[in-house]
Every structure is written in structure tokens, then in C-alpha cells.
Image 1 (cartoon, each protein chain N blue to C red):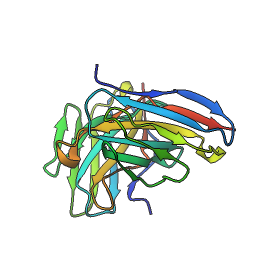
Image 2 (cartoon, chains in turn orange, green):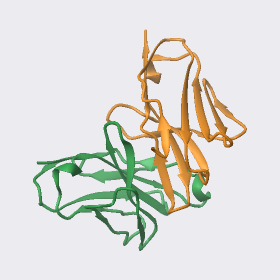
Image 3 (cartoon, rainbow over the protein chains, first blue to last red):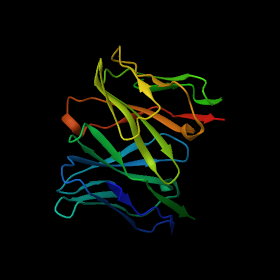
Length: 111
Length: 115
């Protein structure tokens, strides 16, 4: 079982739709949590950090449930430019200072 | 401009021919790391470095070496490349001043093909 698991998708949604991605992590020592965005064949870039209290950045809302070891990302009013792969990322410092990436969820937003 | 620079961006080589992928960052970051990305597997950590002269293995270190003689540079060395090292490689860095919570900044990637 992978340490960080995501549904690979693809998610195909029309413009304006709301879409939600989920991610689970297995190591309870994980300390910090992120969503990164990766466009095809490009480098990943930070979308947002994820906090237990939940956090919002414009159309994007991220949530962390430490008890269930579950992270979510909600995208409202999807735009064509949101088409990308979304990576769930976890930092921990047990067994070394590691950054663990999920394999990513592919999103296609269509006109 | 704050950036992580990798070279070469693209390389085709043959089995057994030693190669080095360079990585340099200009943000004075303590932490640097190498990842490989393969379809369906996501990014996997090869090696990382907490600071100068401090390196440690990630999840897939076999067949790779690294060094951290200067804070800004973190080269990845393939002493004897094999076809299973064909992959997309990313170098990344971040500050450690915020503990383990900082954003990772990535280079643009190096696509390596080993024939």
C-alpha cells in the first residue's frame, strides 16, 4: 500500500462545475500537508497548504482530518485553466525528513 | 529571480556511461532533494540533503549518488546508468527555517533516456 493514496481519475468536468479530490495517508507521524498542481511535463507548483482548521484560497478549499488521515481539495466554478494533475503531498520527519507525493489526480475541465 | 536550475533538461545516453545532472538554487535554502517521476508512480524521492555535507537516502537511492559541497548545488550522479533509470528527474529545494512545513521549489525537470 502506498503511503499517500489518491484516486488517479481522470475527472472530466464541465466548466463551472464543482469537483472534489480526496487523499489518504498512512503514516500518523506526518506533520504537514499540501496540494501541488502539475501541468503536463512541467514541474509541480504549490497550490496550497492544508490545515486542520480548513483553509480557502479563492475557488479552492482544502481540509485535513488528522483522525481519519484524510485530506481533501474542493474546486468550485472550475475553469479550463484548472486542467492539470493535482498532487497530494505529505511531510514527515520520522525515518528521515521525507516529502511523500501521491501519484496525482488528473482533472480535465471542458468547455 | 528565485529559482532552481537543472541541467541538462534533456539527455539521451547509453548504458554504463557516467552522467551528472546538476542542480543549483539561489534562495539560500538548506534543504535540497532529488525526485524521479514515472507514470503511475508519482514522484519518488531519491536523495535529500539537510545542509552542506549532510545527505541521506530517500526511497529509491539505488544506482544514484549525490554530493553537497556547497549550499547552492546538489548534483545527481549516475555512475553506470541503466535503462530502468529512464525517467523524468526533478530537483527541489526549500528552507528549513519553518521546520518541516515549507514549500518545495522545483527545477523544470530533466528528462533522461538510457538506451
